[in-house]
Length: 95
Image 1 (tube, helix red, strand yellow):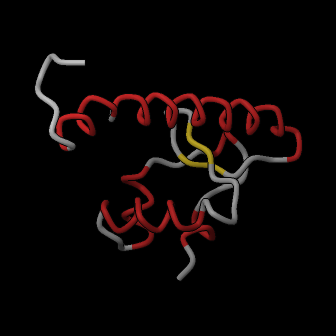
Image 2 (cartoon, rainbow, N blue to C red):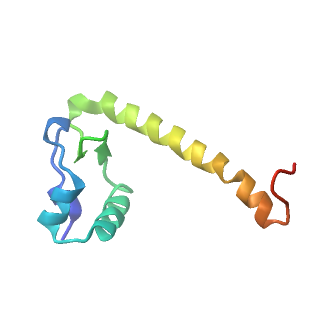
């Protein structure tokens, strides 16, 4: 089974993760992992209304998603800084 086959084309056809779980028979965690793996080769977007594969006309939406996810990844990267310092022998509240 390929999860991509269950992800509709076009933002107007976006599908919720709950519905994808029902259609695929996968539990939520397994579905999220399958989507994560599929995204390595396929454009699968989600702007909060559900998952979809963009149409040719939605190329700008895909670019916006890429920018959004890049900013999110950068934020997560920097959020780790204090914990990394602590794990490496630092103390809370020290530079």
